[in-house]
Image (tube, rainbow, N blue to C red; front, top):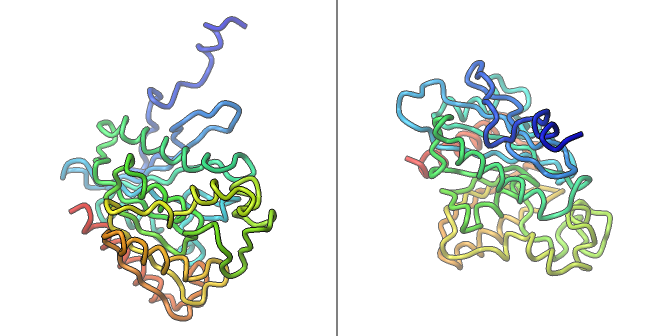
Length: 286
């Protein structure tokens, strides 16, 4: 096969591919990047119904799943039966909402998932004029493992995020906390890094938001259940303390009786946490 024919029959590169027709104001399965030898990287995008106020600020949502599984449009156990769903609700508040695939730990090791999310932001900036999105006002929002990746994104000065909403996320992959043993090669953290964290200390530090804190970090909202048996609340408490020490703005909100994924919390508590998080994001971009 000639190289010219190979280029001709290949799918268009995400930088120039036609955008799907929105219906209704939701673009599903939009390719945003190509990684040699890997599946296509795609995102879904919710756009505000009322686009008459100029480009919309952006929420980049990052799904959880222990870096091993998960769906890009899933905000966790307690929001799955909401109608409209949580991402549609964020869009109804005036945001464009992008939720992006990233390579899972069975496909590639860290920093691959973080690189993918940076690629999603690059694509969104490139196509922003067509989409009506103001990427200079970007809030990253993630839950669990997605919150870990969202924290790292927000702490990257090159990303220049407006802020971060982080739900019950790991912040330190170097020391034992709860069920996590850094010497075990069988933990989700080890699968993310490709080895037990204690065996690759430099990689574990690089993948730990607590080591990436700096004084110019954007505002953070950290929300965590006090009875989280999977990711102990000390992860958010430690990250909040580091941010405060650095002089960054941070709000820490802990939730009594809530386990991971808000399991055990009353429905109205979960709804209030979502509303509080959304209002925090709105203040950052107003």
